[in-house]
Length: 157
Image (tube, rainbow, N blue to C red; front, side):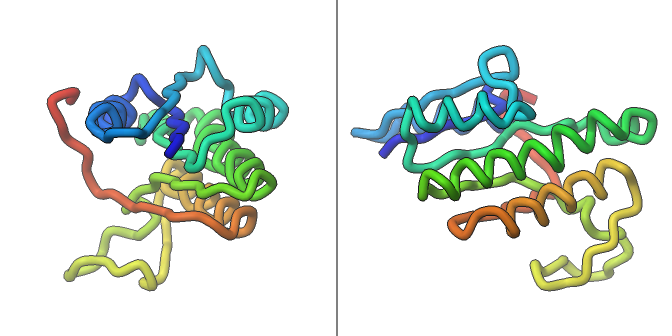
């Protein structure tokens, strides 16, 4: 199986590489923003066409939650538009797309654990940008998984 990982230098991207290195017979390509601008539709399509992965995992994100309030344009470009670009390219190639999102798509007022069917109501630019990314992914690619995480921790941070 061939995997393509975006955001390879981040915490999640680093952990994914560690796990994939242990899988016998699997191959992966891990790219950061210097090697693949995920906001560039032509570059994304060219990479997927060239490498021909079975699965693309989007571990790239604008994660500066507080800073996103003053950098809405870049947060939206990376967290919303780029996942849509990746999802469309995966749909065209007939491959799976895994997109990592966040619990910030909820308002944070729940007294029990959130379920995927709970209503979303982001309270920040960061949460709104991640929700828009989820929507673009859902609309653009039939073979997709959206993983919402509340916290990421590892030996990398």
